[in-house]
Amino acid sequence: MRRRPALLAGALATLAGCSGREAPEPRPTSTEVPAALRTAAPRAASTPAAGATEQPGTPMAEREAVLGLLNKRNNLSQDLVIKPGEQRRVGDVVLRLAACERTAPWEMPRETGAFVQVFVRKPGSAEDANWPRVFSGWLFKNSPSLNVVEHPIYDVWVKDCKMRFPGEEDAPAPAASGDAGDERAKPSPRPASSPKASASEQAGGAERATSSNET
Image (cartoon, rainbow, N blue to C red; front, side, top):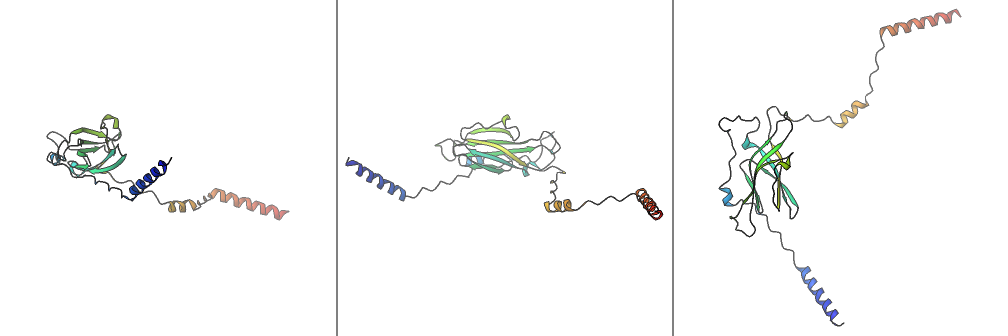
């Protein structure tokens, strides 16, 4: 029975010591692409291959793909904007973009795709070593089940391909609510009476006046 107060005092002293310590600062996320992957970075195709027809729209090198990246361990996701031929690193994963496409506004069904390569560093390996490629292929926005990134930690998907086609313009802005309200408040003009109706009304008025004088 006498040991309980001593144990409680020791526990309280331990908690007090722990509460006085400052929480460790979070480690910054590495964003520098490893040297081994930088030397093998692809280049965006600026000219079509021989015999291929150049597609209309923004040139491939000037397009921008928006890729979503999810870390399944901490449930944190972020959007990465990458141009063809570029790559981005977030911690232990590197995303490399080779191309992105989307259908023209007059084509149906509409689809957006990006050719992506995913590299993930093996746990415990050196900074510039052991970055195996875990995915390489096209990802589609409206048909994600056609090709998926199968990895226990990371998930990658395509969200947009920023490009424009010839003649493609922004939709006109809708009218302001105040203007619409003013138009609704205005009364509609009354239809003008026809000449025949006015003549018949005048004749009827003359007949009524004659009958009143006779009486």
